[in-house]
Image (cartoon, rainbow, N blue to C red; front, side):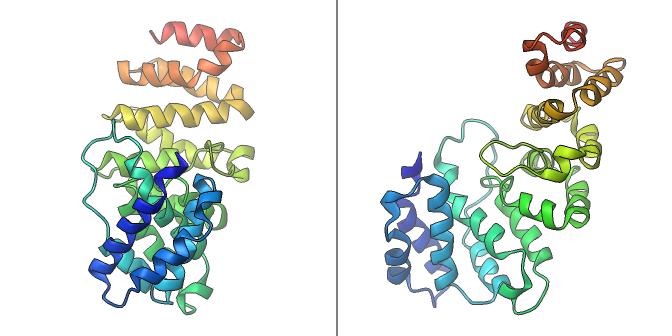
Length: 262
C-alpha cells in the first residue's frame, strides 16, 4: 500500500499544483518529496510529502490551502469500490493536520475556518477522518459544532466524516482520550446518523458504537436497547453490527439484543 505514494503520485501532485499555481517549482518539489521516500511506510510518506508541499507553497497556511483546494480533482460520486487510488490524498490530509491548527503557520491569524473548509472538500475525494482528530482534541467544542452542521449535508462522505472522524478508537489513528473516557459528546452525532439512507454512513455509526463498547459496554447496550423498540431495518443492522464484538465475547445482553434486531 505504501507504494501508492511513490514516484507516480508525486509527479501527479506536482502537475496538479503547477496547473493552478504558476509560482510552483515542480522539479524542486519532486526532489524534496522523493528524498528518502522509499525507506518510509505509508503514513510517514504522507507526512513527508506534506512537508515538501509546505516548503514550496505560499508561506501563509491559508494561501497554501487555497492552492491545494484549487488543485483537487472532482468529488467522488460513489462510496464503495474506490480502491487505493484515493490514498493519493493522504499528503493533503497530513498538510491540514500538521499546519492547520496553529496560528504560527498562518501569519498569526486563526486557521480554523480554512482548515474546516479544506477538510470538508477533502473528505469528498478521500477522507478527513484522520486530519479532523487533532482538531477534536484541541478545539473540541468548535469542531463538534461544525460536525453537527455537517450531519445533514447531502454528501454521504461528509456525513460519514462526522461519525468516523469522531470515533474514540479509529484504526490507524491516535485515540481521542476525551471520547474514550466520556463518549457522551459524540452520541448526538450517532443518534442523528443511525438511520442514514447510506450504508456507508450507518456502518460508520456502528463502528463508532463498537469503539465505545470497548470502554463503556453498558452505555452502548442501553442505547441499542432504546433504539430497538422503534428500530427500522436499517437501525437493526446498526445494532447487530455495533454489538458484534461483545456478542463474540459471550455477553448475554448483547446476544439477546442482536437476536431481537434480526
